[in-house]
Image (tube, rainbow, N blue to C red; front, side):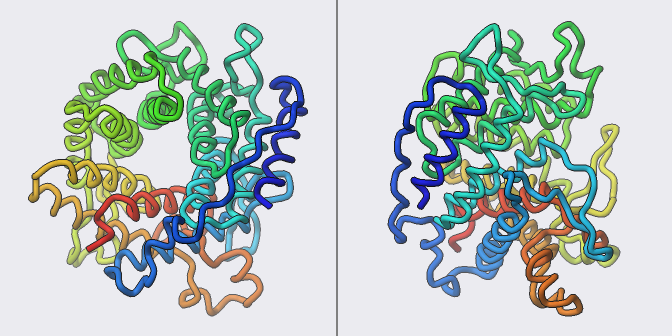
Length: 419
């Protein structure tokens, strides 16, 4: 079934996007045997520690919720207000891309055909928001300006979703490479990523908050692209990015900057064993752990495992939320790299932070136990598996569940999940 769906999807891609002649696409590889699906490694689930059991269940239920939110045209229903039983306004292309990425990661983890189909449909719908650059047919550019959706963020996240998509063939991978060529154009000689449209304007002045999200996403896409299709410019871009943003982070630390840079630097280390990449990951995640609310805080017991906010160079004791999924992703990357060291103290500290973050995050998911007051059909279709925004905000949004699923899946592959 997956072969048929992806073949049809790629025919539509060729026809709609104009990527070349509509030749029959290469068939997708068959689904892996059940024993090779990552989810199968957690059988029997009861043999694993309680945090791992919670993470597996939450990741699978969250993935199922995302799949139910997918609509016939490939986009996800953006969000839902359970108290009003009404869809949420504010749909955004970048958040759609993040949901597509999480869906592709989930499909790879679960081996679920439905997840793979949904992820493929979502990717195709997002590719329709891009076009070939008239100046370079090897470059694919988001159509809308960054004022409506940051082009660097969209291109990077969409490329990552394609690389994660099970069964993606050469035509789709070529589109991911074209998106990375757009990112290539955004690189600067000092190692920074120019993440706004105006070539002569300073990104830090035009969009100061964007530095915490978009350069890391771009470098991560380029790093993963280098694993799939190595090129000298890609490895050099990530190396220079590490040099630039390691210095920048020390002067301007921010939890989301750590969360977005860490996956790129981790990917670089796994490919090159770069000591600089590992050192930067450890520095950022040590700082991030310092923002985590500890267990046993009598003032805010429901915040344990979540993270303080950060603004104007200061940590603030505000209510944490599902951004914890991004930070869990970062900490899991850090723990993965710690397996290559003998730093037992740092590993123990990171593992405890991971366990606490998993506990906080999985407590913000609609389950059978906390939805019994809703009508059965409504809770089954709209609520179960979705992650709400914070301990006091029960609204659902696709990017919130996507960040949670991505973080939990990274945790389940970092080594801390085993004992």
